[in-house]
Image 1 (cartoon, rainbow over the protein chains, first blue to last red):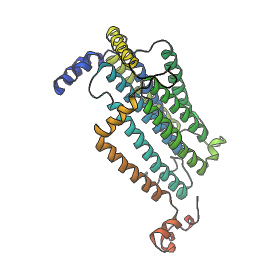
Image 2: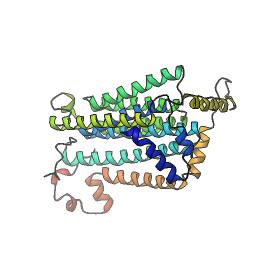
Image 3: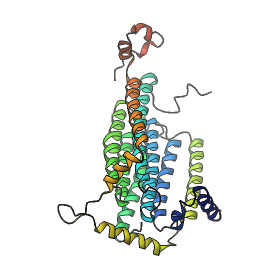
Image 4: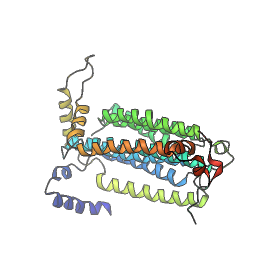
Length: 135
Length: 220
């Protein structure tokens, strides 16, 4: 179904952007971009599975880092793709990745602070025992 | 980009390493092992960044993630002991129905993502154009200055990223610095003990400690 819809997306992109993306659209069939995307997708899904299945709060945080990292890989792959085909600002992906890393660092600092405060109060970091607000 | 020759070997080595280390991060019983596997996954992804020509991001990834965030994780794992999980006395995963539901959800996610990627960017359909851009890039790289050893070339990638950060993304850059400031102050506020809180806020410790009496004196 996706392959039938993709010309529609292409048309929409061209119409809404005033032809800015025509260069991108021409080069969309790019040989090795999809390999990086598949690797990033697999990493993302491993991270999602970790968030959903583990009991240990710290390992859940690590799985979130895995998810963010998969997004970074996607951004860098598309940045390289734009460098190759010459569309838009080719370094936008790398700049965005820097911001993702910054936000991940801030999130880790705050999250681990919460983990320490929680452990001090409840003596546990297992998410199925932290159910005070659950009914 | 088109992977050629040793690039293919490099790509498959590090992508398989990243995926295996990611899987082991989720599966490991000991949280310290999880952290170490996550470090190796992050390093493998940094190698993929180098393959994609993003040397600066690869360096930032190693320095910030592996050098900063993961060390913080290891500190917290050491502070919060999870002995029961390591010794096998308690399960590492949630209850079986939850795990089954999560795995079914992940399976749907796998199918959807792979289908979408194959639909939109499938296959080597436009090899000539890609070959052209690759050779153009190679020619561009040949014009770069050589390094001190005369073997490798000095790219201007980092310089361009820096210029982009200060022009194209100047406002988000400032906002990110504010976010980091908030994170520093917030984590200090969150992690202090009741005693420290009482002395900093000039409140009588007895007033703060009245409701849960067992909490005072657990300095970590």
